[in-house]
Length: 227
Length: 126
Image (tube, rainbow over all chains, first blue to last red; front, side, top):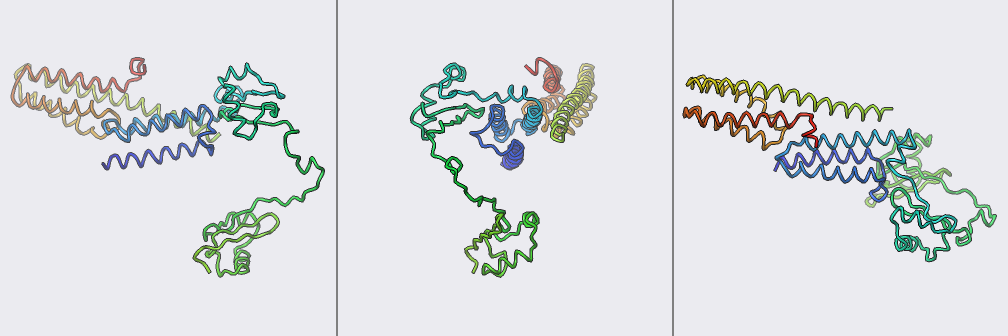
């Protein structure tokens, strides 16, 4: 039993580290090579977890080999477009200027029913409303409707909209000070304490979330047990 | 550049480790087999104390490498060879020449399998 426990712990951390190395993409957004890697890793990890008759090393070595190869190939694909195309494929245009490209659909084994399903999923009921539809490497369909079917933007209407959008920076997270972000904003801990007191608290430890945006606006959410 | 080097280093380390394990296994198996051959010749010459001593020396050498063997080789093959060692020791104690010779032949074959499993060969890869 202890063998199973320890093997599971080791393999769990190894797989977690491996998936962390793969990046931040979700399963649905994986490239073909990444999907293969994920499936192989999970299978390789479960066998030595359950079968004590085989050494743990016979699971770890293939996992490390796969991860190294994956890292090496992703580095190669960064350097060469040809290798990137070979490994990841390239996006295919299924609808070009409103014209359905049946040869591309056949080549990608994408049926008209699947295309219509994807369009309906994105709120489009008519094929004529689509200018471009691109089948991405991840298998997702990106759809660009004709501009005439979309609501006009402020730019289209020639209206000037003030740029009020800025990325809020988290300074306090669950009562903990994020010093790195505070330095990035060019503020000191004394300044923060002053702002916290202005919000009616004694200390930033009483704050659940405190953010500062580009315009200098502070948003503060207290901890439920504070005050 | 760092990611390149890390992955290449890791792959090279795995390959080197596998090659080293193969060499070490071949060397150990060859030594155990020569010890077993000594026991076999002693038994053929009716020198049972010599046969028992050679077998015991081989078993001690084998037993000292159990941790590494269990880390690198399939447990069923290692455990199978261990059981054969013990049976051979029992036949040597009972001074049963034919059973002893048969058990030693089986044991030597099992040890050869152990070394063969680690070899870089087309047979193993495919």
